[in-house]
Structure formats: structure tokens, C-alpha cells
Length: 63
Image (cartoon, rainbow, N blue to C red; front, side, top):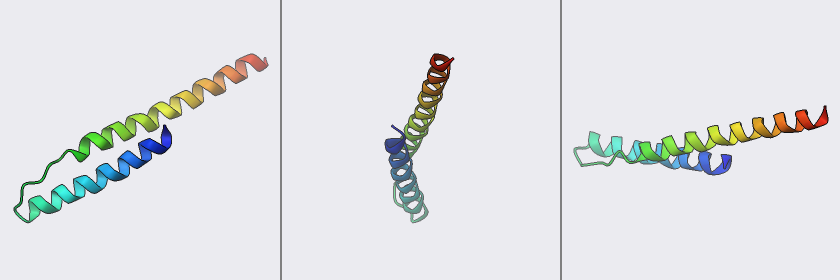
């Protein structure tokens, strides 16, 4: 999940950069890259939460 999150953040950033460059040149650009960035950040955050939950479960079962 973390890997896909990072990939989506990179693609979203590239898409957003392309939209900004297109807008600077007067062409219509779509800001849909923001959706990919938000989804990527959510996936990275969720992966971190799952890892913490697993560590808590492992620590609890060891005691």
C-alpha cells in the first residue's frame, strides 16, 4: 500500500506540474493531479497506521 501511495504522489505531482505549465502557456489544464496526491497521501498514512497496529498487537501478544 505504501508503494502505491508513493507512486500516486509522484504521478499526481507530475500531472499537477503539467497542468500548471499548461495554464502558464494559456492552454486549459486539468488539476486532476490533486486527487492522485490526496489518494497517495491517504494510502501512505493508512499503511503507517496498519504497521503501528501490527506492532501493538505483536507487543501485546508477547507480554
